[in-house]
Length: 119
Image: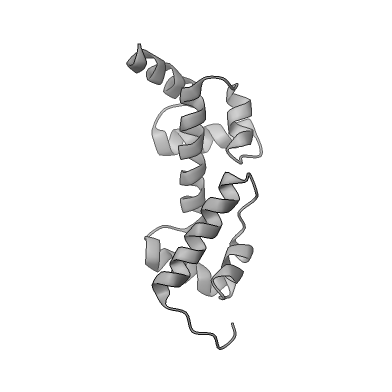
């Protein structure tokens, strides 16, 4: 899109900064908005992101959200539902499914294991 030519590293830095900033602020991270940051169409951006990170965009964002959730679960002050919502998941079942796929534990098992390690 457009004739502006950016160095790939600068483009990827802008993209990653956008993703991390949105997640820190609790905003939704969309492929189309992130593609605009990269000055690419969504289809071109998906290919570009996969080449640069070796991950699909949605998988990368989900892994970051799960990482945030791990910190909140370890903190122990929020319920698991509150953690799911704070990490950007729309509902508990979606959160549990993604968490288990990535961490090989349920959020409850993760919290329990963390507490046992720190005692």
